[in-house]
Length: 289
Image (cartoon, rainbow, N blue to C red; front, side, top):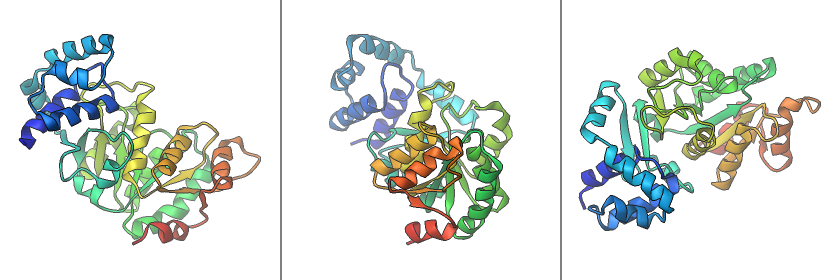
């Protein structure tokens, strides 16, 4: 089996329309049996609808691989596939793992103990104080913080971790050549240079609404556990926590004022079995090994 050829085919597929993560996994399964499968054969194996087959075949034919390779090289963006040894094992184990990850920065961070930390995009002084209380001890114990570079808690997690001289991983819902929200441009660049920036989306991918729940499965899937700080009901943070639960990972939640709608989600997580966190020790005792 020619691994280089397989990885090139996966890279090619990651720039095609008409297919999602599950379809890509089915196509990879077909490629493992026959790396020389045609695009049409792959579409049949993936059980695409006629409309999606047309979209996929047109986009597959339009991909100019050599030009793409040069564009990624120019922007200092690299990638690894689910077939590579460096692909994080915890992520490989989840339902519907990304078949390819684009990255900038230090890939070796994925070999360390990772903790997802997520929360409200409209964080309060309470949320900031919680981070100030928990993060220094976690960083001191060499825990790498994973979050989504969104407004509020996510952004604060990355910034405070770096101020404590720790390491952080940001998973974004766009191509790595785009920034969302734009005011985090400097922060994203710093993470890509000194820490680790990840995305399953190719160059040019916009911040589409459905990208972010998909991004959340990567945040949860990379990590030993997920810590939720300030979350309403039906928030993206709760999606991440539920994904972690589905994968058998630890879920931690910081309790809040029961009269505050902004923490109803975190309090509900605790009510239904998430570990109540009052100090960093409550997290470390579950993920230290």
